[in-house]
Image 1: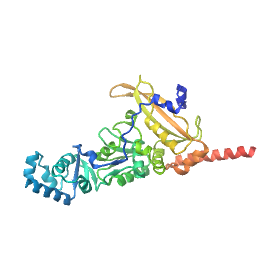
Image 2: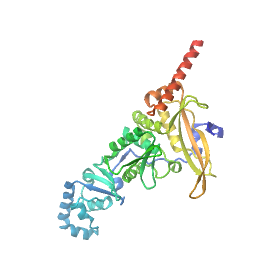
Image 3: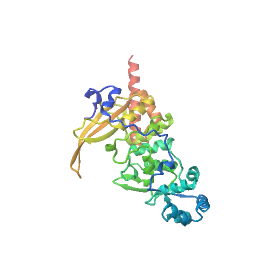
Image 4: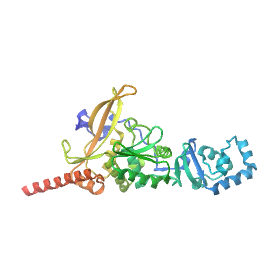
Length: 363
């Protein structure tokens, strides 16, 4: 039911939101993903500079005389030959164990990486290790994944939007963060522009605490490094979220405001589950000193999963930025890149200013 406020259920204070939240804190990350974060992942492959391979060969000959003897002692597979002499990639897990045995610096290892990918073949050339998301492009990319994007159960990150310029903006952010990304798939379906990124990118953002699967089921949080970020970077995050999930409102019950809404699905007999994205975004917006409504239940519906015939309950949780001052500041700092939403917001602000001016003239 649209406009059904949270306090209609007897919960009207900020501290009481936890009674509807199953809050799981994100891993305490600084927004950087290092090569060492993948050491135990047998699915990840890497390739290094020829100079580094010569260094490995030098250490092998010094300790074991030949590569054959080295493989025999450690019980490693023969793909070390392909890695050293045929420019093939190798499992990072296997290569790490080799470097550990040879006592070669892991810092030199990270600096020598020229490719990181997965056993499917696609990956990132000239990777920008460590992968730093604690910047404006990183905030925008994560906002896109949490907004109209997704991280599938198979670690495939994707982004969908009807506006191509928004898709291209997310791609530019990805190149800035990761490096030269191979294997990007981009196509149009039913009027929507869709981009699928390679699996290695999904495994990287998974390290930030972004769960795999449908967001309405996994109910993710906004990563802590974003919630604790600077004002400039938070605004960049909100710009992307606004284009994906924000909408100007000109009708009751929240006339002339900007609404943000995220949904969650759950088993039908459970009590209502708060959207963590709505909750976290509400917190983030407050740190920027915007005037908002309380979080309220914007909609409620049943959803039947055809494969299992199981019925789920869906809840849409929302809040609105409101008031002439906050809307004007939102328009100037964040706004909308989508022309129709931009015009609608401007129309609302103009109306509020004129209405206020009319009241002053009456007195």
